[in-house]
Length: 387
Ligand SMILES: *Cc1c(COP(=O)(O)O)cnc(C)c1O
Image (cartoon, rainbow, N blue to C red; front, top):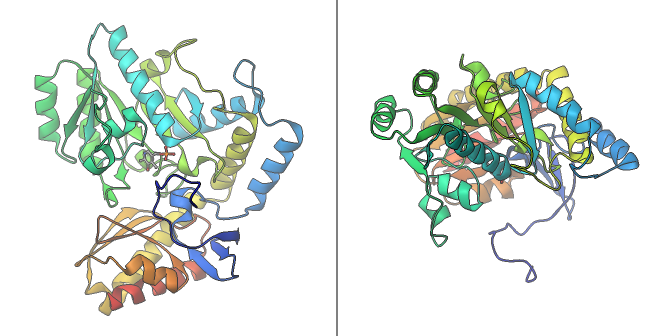
């Protein structure tokens, strides 16, 4: 441990292997994993399709660089843009990198339209990553403190407040885009309403702003649709995704359509590892499995089952303010802060996360079945009853 920078407050446990929704620690204890590597392991642990894709690709080729054509990258690009309704995409290795690409794209789009100091609207409570530009876009002072000077060119707006956005449009001719998560994850599972996002779409059309959705966490089937906007009757200009895309093999993507798809040209962005054969072959297997196995529909059904089971437990429900989110991205807000709840869950063999002090965040694998979802709901209900 001492050889590692102390950037994480880790629980004193090491996992040796996993299977489906379960993880096993080095002592042989079993845990129901309702965090899934922070919305990464949508297919759970040791999914055979993922293992096979990694094995087969590693047998042939892991990396060649983007100096050459990469077959798996072209195939994944085709499949991912088709499912997203986008025209093209750029591959990086993480969510922050996907958002960096989107931020660069938006600035270049502005400069191409003769806007000297292009600005991007971002929302209160947003989380977009830990690189300098993405932490500057993030709406959480704790993440920014100590890293000033921040990257300029971001304008902060309250979420779900269309009037505030109209004010910004009226007073800031330099705005070129808005970047937002359809459901804010890190700030406590806070959804943007469909009405708000549809109104944002209208403002973007009128002002010629790019609507850029950060689906790093909400994407890849997590909320029931492949991407969350697909349940909201609108289409963005730019979509970023990462977490669940490679089921744990690092990969992120920035997709664009229409005018936004024609902004970045040769030499204007790049990544040595981005879109390498191993990551892309894996992500293609993940995407194929999510769509062919109907895991989005399963996420919707299991999310509903968990929500219903929590409300049906009257003693637990008495401590719940609301349950937010969609599919298998759920935030259960309690009436009181629950600082010891994640630890008690851990002791009971349940991996969950508490955000914003009082909100239990559930992000189980999309492959969770009825029995496992019932066990998860029963475990969480018991923790809430004792809270
Ligand atoms: C996790 C997350 C990121 C950052 O992704 P990294 O892979 O950690 O860089 C960005 N945006 C959202 C919405 C996220 O949840």
